[in-house]
Amino acid sequence: MAGYPMMAGGVVDLSEGGKAERFKALALPHLDDVYTLARYLLRGASDADDAVQECYLRAFRHFDTFRGGPIKPWLFAILRNVCHAAYAGSARLVFTADGADESQAAPIWREHGDTPEQAMLRRHESETMRRLIGELPAEFREMIVLREINDLSYRDIATVIEAPIGTVMSRLARARGMLREAWIAAEGGGVSR
Image (tube, rainbow, N blue to C red; front, side, top):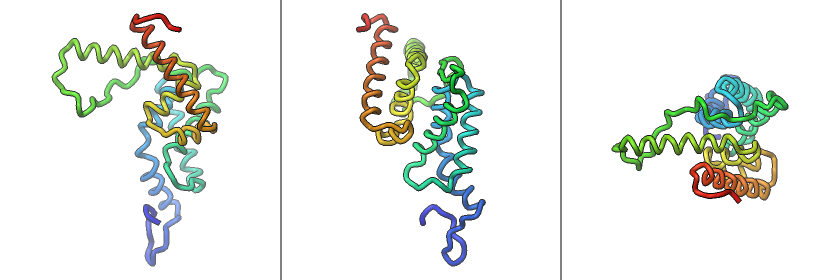
């Protein structure tokens, strides 16, 4: 039983302390990804903070029901349920680009010698993309965030949203098309179909 604290004699430690250590080791590395999804699903940082806290409390409380495999989709499913239960009908399940975290690290392949013009263009493109993703209808925004930002597989997304893989693929294709058309329109490069 790799990854579980062992006691004398090879007995697995299933005490609360052992549970806490296992949960910490498996779930905490995904905290930033869970928060990112919460930010895209909810209006502000405070709501996202609350939802992530509730997600992790529920996940810890029900950690004994986790049956292994990737924990990230399991956490996303809990977060999604928290967001929908807590904010259902309140129209707060909308991401706004204001206040988004600007401190994301540059990819290692990018040279640090950007000119001021290149830096401004990159910032403009990033802000525009966040805004455009935030303007997508909720079911399509969620697909883009889960696949393109959090890099979940179609199968993991299907688990999170409790839908068949075909539905995931269809929604993702439609979301990408909508995002592409919105990008072209925002850049003044053409007329949407």
